[in-house]
Length: 407
Image (tube, rainbow, N blue to C red; front, side):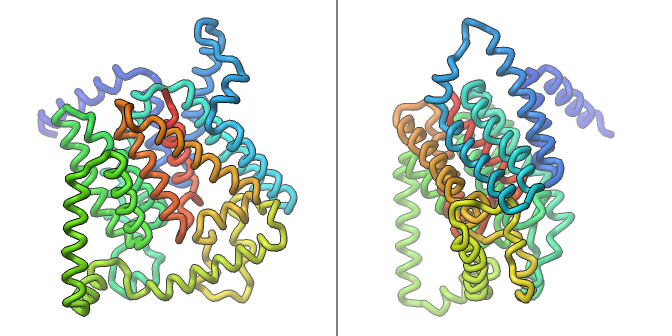
């Protein structure tokens, strides 16, 4: 091994050894959450346990003691998050899905509790560090994605397109994670002055964009560009927005004179474009399966990850293997009931309101803009998919929401 590489490894280990314990726990948690579907809860519980320890320790300090009534009244997540967890657990028990009730208690419960603790325990700087560690995860996951591409997409194989899934088990989940990580990377660019750190962010962002395209997620690409537009608008980047507007006018003008060539080019560039009509028809069928069950019992949910139980036995092979309704709001309604989906929307609205209220004068404006963009991405992506139906995606989403309300 060359001496230069050895020195870099020693410097990195020395740097890690000098980090505060909280940041070491963050790094380990990010690695565990990003590594696999099954290791993600371990990362969640590690971060949850350590943050709970810090919270209990701080509670004994009379100088920083915060009354419970104040926590309840000020917390963005406590009340709606508790309703969401209770609704998911009760619905699962009501329908006899006892294992799924445990998932609600031991997965969704710690996510909500962690978001509440982050809200009051972490500083903005802690949130920035977590975001930076998450963005740096892109490189190793991208390497894994190239070495082990997705093998289950029959439609994708028919078009000879490689689809990347990384360590997230599905290209659409990987796409969603890349979308929110890329928004975080954009926000970090505004405050990072260290040349080496900025280079690492740029490399991670470029790699992330390439991987996003090769996930083959059409919804993901659209959601990303919607999120990017929301981010730039929130940052009042008038020059960039003007450039984008001029470019779009040019594209539409060219398309009006040469529509056939534009359609042909779009079909070549846009991932899996020939399957768009088929994909929409499939979505309608999947939504109807969920809506039929919701119509029977709209108030009480069936429990997390139970969509598959309601797929007809005579369903086509494309539907039989589906694990969610491909719409985040319909899926939440089915699995957590009406109180659950209302609580989920309540959380999103409260986080958005808080971000918009602080946006104008905050020194952390890029990160607030990234939060607004992340929620826009989640809603946009969630209209045609269910990106949070994975332990990895929902854990990262919950933590990032908690970070958005620190300080």
